[in-house]
Length: 378
Ligand code: FSX
Image: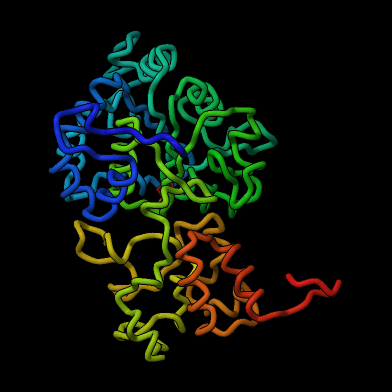
C-alpha cells in the first residue's frame, strides 16, 4: 500500500494524495465528494480507458437494489459525473438473449453472451462481482446458473482479464447467507467466511487483486467511492478482511446514535424504545462499518437509529456467527465470559487499531487473563 497517487496529476484541481483523497471521501460522503471532485475522477477514468463489468451470482439482488436506491447522488447522476462506462450488468441491460422478441440475436448488441465474451477478450475492466459463487452440487457449480453456464465458470472466465475485482456485498465478499446451505458449497471471491484458502481465488488458482465492499446490502457510497478510487488509480488501503479501512475501520458501537444510552446502562428489553439495543441482540460492538456517521437513504438514518439491532452484516462470519440476531452477544460465546462494559472498552481500543472480530475476541480474552488447559494464555 505504498504508492501515493497525485490525483492532481490527472486533472486540473487541488493537489490530493491517496490519504487525503480517502479521508475526504470518507468524511463527506459520495454526494459532496463527487460534486466537488467529479471532474478529476472523470478525467482520470476517461484517461484510464477502464470499464466496469458487473456479474451477479447467488444473492437476493439487494446489492444492485441498494446501489440503485442511492438517492444522493442517484446512480445515473453518479455514473455520469464520473464518466463511468458500465459495459455489462445482466440485470440492468435491455432484454438480451439467443432470441429477442422471437428473432435470433447473433450480435453483441442483442446477445449478452456475445457481449460478455467480447469484453473478456478485450480485458482491462474493473470486475464487480455481486452474490456468492456456488460450487455445488459436487463441484459442478450448477446450483447457480447464468444462462446455460454455471456462474462459477462465468466468474472463472472473467476474472483473469480484470485489472481489479470488487466483491460487492457480503455474499460476494465472504459467502454470506448462501453459506448457510452446506450443499451449495458457497464461497466469496477472496474469502469463504474468514478463510482465504477457501475463497474462490485460492480454490481456482486466480491472483487478481480483490477489494471487498461487504454489507447485506452494501451502502451505495461504499461502492461509488471505492470505484472512484480504483478507476482513478488510487490505492485503496484495506483491512485484514480486504475491506477499505476508510469505511470499515471502526465499530458501529463507537459512534452509535444510542451510545449515550449504553454508557448510562439504559438498555431496552423490548423494541420501540429509545435506549441501547444491546439486550435485544445488537452486534454493533462486533461490526466494523461507518453506518452511524454515513447513514443510509441519503443520510436519513441507519439500523440502530431506526430501532433495529445491528446484525453485523458487514462481517465475514455473517450471518451464522451472529445468529440468533435478537439474542445477546454473550449468549453466542463470541465475547466468552467478558462482561459487556469491559468488552465495549476493549472494542473501542480495537477500533483504533482496525482490528476485526477475532482480534476483539483475542483482546477480550487477554484482558480477562484466562489460561487455557495447557497453561498458556489464549
Ligand atoms: Fe447478498 Fe446481494 Fe445480501 Fe442480497 O445480490 S449481500 S443477500 S442484500 O443482495 O448478494
